[in-house]
Length: 77
Image (cartoon, rainbow, N blue to C red):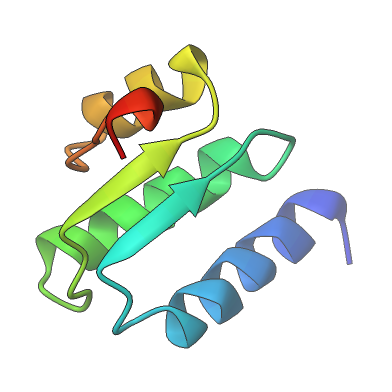
């Protein structure tokens, strides 16, 4: 199995675990783009109770916002 497929499977597994989370901290790393894509799909389809995410960096915050995920700045949490 290639790395991209593993990332897809991991993102799907994580989303199943966090379905009822209302506030989610999102970090950085190689999984970020894949995870945000899955997170965005789940959020828009109503499969998450997420109120907002808190990003660990400005870059992550921008990516979340671009994907339609509500974000609260880290320093206001």
